[in-house]
Amino acid sequence: MSWFSFHAGDFAVAFLSVLLEGIPFLLLGSLISGLVDAFVSPERLTRILPRNPVAAVIMSGLLGLLFPMCECGSVVVIRRFLRKGLPVGCAVTYMLGAPIVSPVVALSTFAAFRGQNPLEMTLLRLGMGFLIAVCVGLIFQKLPASSLLQPGVSGPDPSPAPSRSGLRIASAPDTEAALPASLSARLQRAVYSASTDFLDVAVFFIIGAAITSVLGTAVDRSALAPLAANPLLAIISLMLAAVALALCSTTDAFIAATSFPAFPMTAKLAFLVFGPMFDLKLYWLYGLLFKRRVVVLLALGLFFGIGLIAWRLNALGF
Image (cartoon, rainbow, N blue to C red; front, side):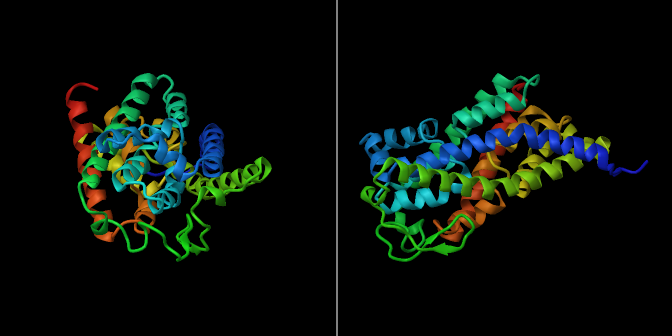
């Protein structure tokens, strides 16, 4: 029997099911991101953080609960914050933690894993995302910014700012006064930012939904059995899949919950924590902020750290 058998009808049902279940959370996340972009200035964010450097990094890991931000738009926002003087450790912690430690992600993860220990998966995902983000932020805090950041990222930079697609656009002045003064103008900016985020991320989500629908309906499950049966191979496989699929954190839980039923929960957990912190699109976006060797070391550190934690959790019976 062939390991691959494609049926258009089965694919359409699976594809629409994943799409219709995940799109509302993607829309909600984009709207919140747009509101943060329009109403939360770097100055306000820095005033929230405590003066103690370690406490500031820890607090930065929780800011996603107040100011949720999809990873696809985080690079532009973090660049703006760095130019206003936000410490690198705090910026990295928020950049890695906000796409996971978020009320939208918590709701989507709980909804996606209905019938699969949703509360346990949600708490483990948010807790592990917070822990990893804070640990990386504390490491970055100890290193000089000049050895981490690209030239012109820290401090005033008259050069054009990078867009989410990697192109360069004219940057606006990084002052709170530069934000639109009237409520209507800020709401227009929020709608524009939200629609841009939604369209950018929807492309990746649709591609991911299509791939996962093919995996779920056309691929013989026995072909994946050798990977799913070995906990370490299962974790590595799903982490690599997260890199390739490049999904948004507001919708990736639906892919993980429906596409890999034979894989252990710890492998799905690694997929859900590693993906929002590093994937193919983030490799290029991070390169706009950090030196390329820093991006590579960050990727390797996240891969081994998250993989090791997930493997140990599996050994403990999770």
